[in-house]
Length: 136
Length: 137
Length: 286
Image (tube, rainbow over all chains, first blue to last red; front, side):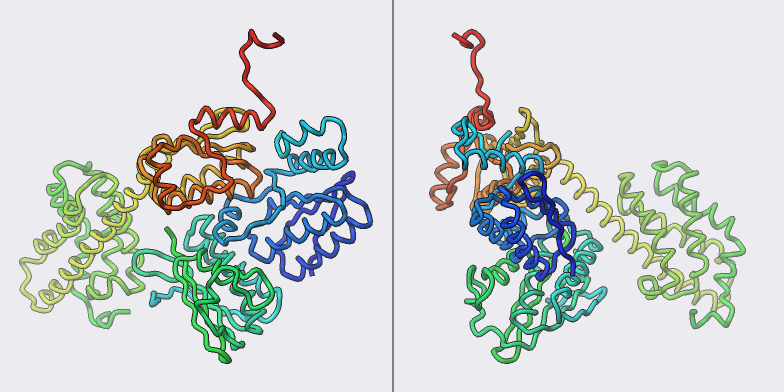
């Protein structure tokens, strides 16, 4: 069974999905991530799906689940790199990702996490950061 | 849905990894009939939903993937069969959000929107048969 | 192998023995039909290729043309020839006449002969050529359809450019009548451009759109939602009063989608959410 590796960069956990996920791997990933967030006290999770060719309802639900999970540990989740064909299909399928945040690429995803993190901690300059959330 | 069949592939859906295999075979077929990238993705996603239904709700079954032609266009036809409990109310099952328990209830209704032709036949206690076709534009 | 392979097929032999003169006469006859629309060299090359693949199957029945395995090569050559003719803007009649001209050449070759067996073979061969002529018609039509489809795609590309109007801001000005197919193509192109250019803002300007129906409105909405899933923001601008009325009358929910009156407003909105504002130079620091 493929297990998706979870990398740590600073206080962010990075999951880059490179294989065609079967349902059990999806469940394993959710489990592994919950453990890692709890163990590391990470402030955010980035899920890179730029290599993923299809997202069906099962995989789509994983994003929402991970986002809810990470919230319990005071961490945010960003899904980055969704392909246009995947996005169009998800919309047609009728699947919404709930309050999962998205970004075009890894770089922007990490920036969003930083802004969210600062806002959460109420650091100076928060007002401006909040208004430019998700943007450069 | 009587279309000339060019090629047929049969596969069992017994375990989790079979769903992934169905996705791969369907994608390969979709590429061969030159579906656009978006249409490929839609068809593979629909096949993934239906294969999972066969496994989870039908207790396993078979998939038949065919390359078809209707004289004008080429397409891919995928049929999913199981001998599971069946669906008591088909009309209800095709409503968004209807679910037999697990899942979001988008499997059937969602996949219908992703394909060009959709045919669902089910008899309670006997099983379910879902056929979908996607044509190259 | 054909059933008559064991007994000698006189016509096949005759054609093979006289292939050179036959080709010359064929080129002459076909050339007359085309009235100089192709060069003799070009025509000769095409017909030589055709004759070379036709000779081995000259004794077969017309019914075999579509199904016979040994006709594959001939079919390919003929299809290719018809496609070339279609793209050279020759008429289907001119294309098929090239094939039928061979009949005349063959009749001239055999008219001195009064062997009844040869005559029967000649009739079979003639209907074989008829079938091949029909085949060119079909291939020709298909090739023309392909040309039309290609032109449609090209037209679509030309009429729906995705333009970069600012760093990170793309715009698609839509003009004319939107149908569901066209809207879908635009949507895919726009989303792909967002990825390719790394832009986080897209503006769909529908100032030039004459009418919007439910399906088109749905496609526009789906584009906005899909863009959001990818991490970009999409604004719709230039909704004209009549279209606004249609949208309300159709009961289409635009929900939390950003709409702006003009493209300029949409650009200003995109810049502002990037933390940029446009100010007159003499007001800076005033």
